[in-house]
Length: 264
View 1 (tube, rainbow, N blue to C red):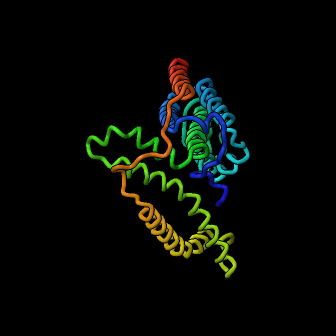
View 2: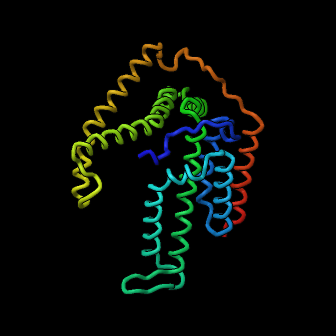
View 3: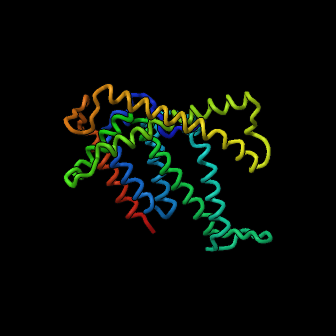
């Protein structure tokens, strides 16, 4: 459970940590769109290079990110196998019984796996290098114009921030419940798939009770501190757009142009 890094924040003073949360959100939005422009080895090489540079600049250890991605790698491998087995394009490479592997399926599976991994890594860097409060402020400012049509932007941003913050908390609570039930004789590691699912079901009731309890405590704490929504609320920290933020936007535009030009 502790290997899942989604929603966790790693304190630091790297250049990625110091970027404005608004430019991080804009850059990630652009990246998730333009990554689908890649369709050959050169363009996917640029995507991988951009992801690696992002990790290096964030100064978050590779080992930490890899540990958090191990559970997701299973899904990526499963997606790769499906593409290899069911895509019938290009030259036939391997034919064993009902298994027919084509060159197009193999390359397509690799490309989709790289695409998924790059998107997950870049989006994960947002939570690893940005505090939940900064994410809330960034989302609220970017969606600020929608307030003119009476949309509850502040409440929406706050809800997303709290959701991200509660992911590691709920995982930690799940770990504690599993250890407590294992000490009482529950077995989560052996048996058939059906038996394992049945063993997990008793976790749900105490987990939901704990989640509702934490939500109630958070609501009471916010009310005790005078929280009344967006009306009349000021910010302790004012976001400032600097030259580093402009440079990142320029880099994202250059990457977009490169992917468009190098497409085949």
